[in-house]
Length: 92
Image (cartoon, rainbow, N blue to C red; front, top):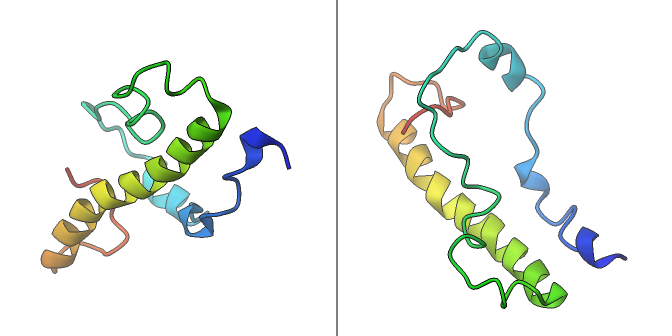
């Protein structure tokens, strides 16, 4: 197993549904902000830490968990509002 594929397949719950594309295809949203899911930890740590491949793979695993925690606030907002569909993902 290669070092760059170490985290592949560990979090199968992260798969996007093919049915969500239908509801998002006509959206023309502005001011979406930056997608932080890929580099939230790497932008906040020293570059000397991320040079080590083992540490880099571990940070990628932690990053997925951290993004889930941040997105859970959005899911709680949707759960609280009974007028919004539970699969709606565009709440700030």
